[in-house]
Length: 473
Ligand code: ADP
Image (tube, rainbow, N blue to C red; front, top):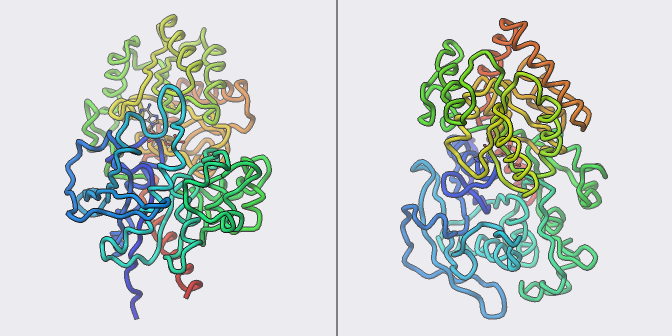
């Protein structure tokens, strides 16, 4: 007998093409499409931030009562779609979401983030009844959605929950006193795992209370259980099974053959378009237009996690060598300043501070090599985009980078967390670029022909969903 399709609600703070600050948004925009292709009814709920209000969406007529806090709150629900296929519900509650910034502003994280994402999480639990759509399973993403399983554990009936960890470094930690606003009974708080000493730790609550846990690569699934990789939560994780499912990429959105952001399209059989993209990127970035110089790219949050400090040291170590750097990103102000300063001082360095999706595509296409010296990396998407665009990634062998890049085959890997190790890996790649163009070209072709769509991961999630539903039954 064929198994029945599942009704799954994704709960998240980001979803491409509506809103994205990093890989989370890419995943939440793409995985539901792949699950829909397997026949499931997958929908997504995110906040209706100010930044998404301009996107066409239909306002559902009935007001939406969210039972959070002593008196409950009302929201409006808007419906839109990812690629006319996956319904996306945008929860409007202006007090929480009609402001500039997603998680914070120049002054830091918003002080009411606990309430804002508790509201999203509580709304997710009420959405099935509101829509008259019986949900089989809730798939929660990162700390912003993790309270859904904490709330679910206090209700007499709620769908099973899967919590996916996209980054254990962001946990949602707040003073314990803030808990009174959530309307969770103090007695239930301890059992849910959400209390950690004097703090509420939202992600910890999810790790303890969700029915199943996943993370976005097999290596990271092992690393999070260790003291070194557990970001203070390895105790909560050590007794639980964590399934590592490697992210895919949206092969339609990231395809050098059709990408509208490029001056010329190309594929593995004909790389002339890539050469044109390189010259165009050099021109756009104010770098000398030269085909013969290796062009090295970096697109990243400027954060310690990403090894941005090592990258800057390496730029200095290579200052006298004939290589060019093109950098895009934002984050820690000291890194922004140091990179901008190097771009101002050196002809061979270009840096754009900010978030620029089209430019990120042009960097993936126009560079020869792409750099990711991460301290830890749950999966990483840029190395996959790079491979697909024929730009060989140079990565630290950690987390998902270890799982997706094979040294000398489809990229370059180094182990040690140091600028010397990164510099040595870049030198190796640059030497091959100059002295072994055929071998370099063959690596490019291998990287470009790797299958990396979402279909494999979607089947693994489907298997996990069914396993949880069987256990709960
Ligand atoms: P993380 O989610 O930890 O930031 P990932 O590699 O998983 O890292 O995903 C990052 C995503 O965000 C990629 O799609 C990348 O291209 C994109 N990105 C990061 N910084 C920028 C930026 N400044 N401009 C445009 N896209 C960016």
